[in-house]
Length: 295
Image 1 (cartoon, helix red, strand yellow):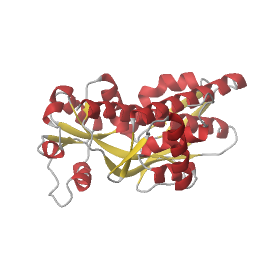
Image 2 (image 1 turned 90 degrees about the vertical axis):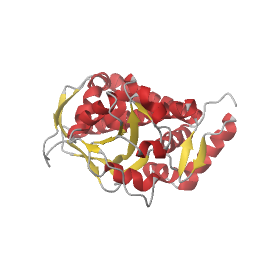
Image 3 (image 1 turned 45 degrees about the vertical axis):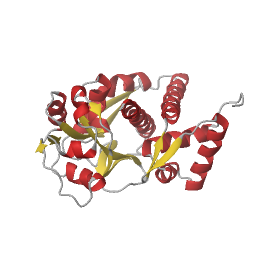
Image 4 (image 1 turned 60 degrees about the horizontal axis):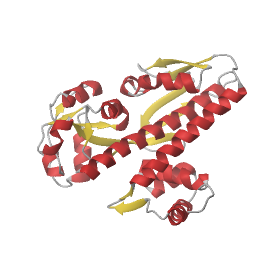
């Protein structure tokens, strides 16, 4: 590889493609063509002398090198954003009302407050997880289709306690259960991806995502969850990802209110959310990749 740094456009394409496991989805997010994403990544592969993606079924699977580049890019982008805020200096605290799904708020966003305070010390959030508020400054919601402001697509992950991972090393073993879910249709959608034409497996269903994760962490079986709910459990080692992910058919969408006095703070908070979402996706993909390599 030459001495010059890789182009940021190529690294951005690698990061987006690693998250989506799709050049098409990455192109849609970056608002460029599929060909532009593919060519950028191929040029970077040539320069690095390393393969970054391999096609497996309908997905483009990132290599360990791609995952490392993706996470490093996300961290660098976050650091740059934080430095810009520091250079601009304090502008007075701005309070933002934020509406989000309850499980997302409790299991993911609450754990990011320290990072939010560090990155945006002049922003205070007032989080609401009950009902909707059309007048909220920022509204996060799961939608049935991707929109221009979607942060990412939901991905379902089968997980279990680490000491049980050997029992669930194949789709057939996972379907054999016992299975746990936080929604009645979760395993049905997963089965449509991995066991098409086969009757969906039965599962113990909790109406609370945290309870479902806790049941699996205590050895109750395989839970079907998502990156945001499960991140803390995966990072702490209480649960391990088994692979065999499946698209959830929902997208995390963000809407902002552009009224004077909050527009700038809201825009910066959305940028921070995008970076944190990318970081979480790269982290979980890295953990899953290492699990698959060990297996």
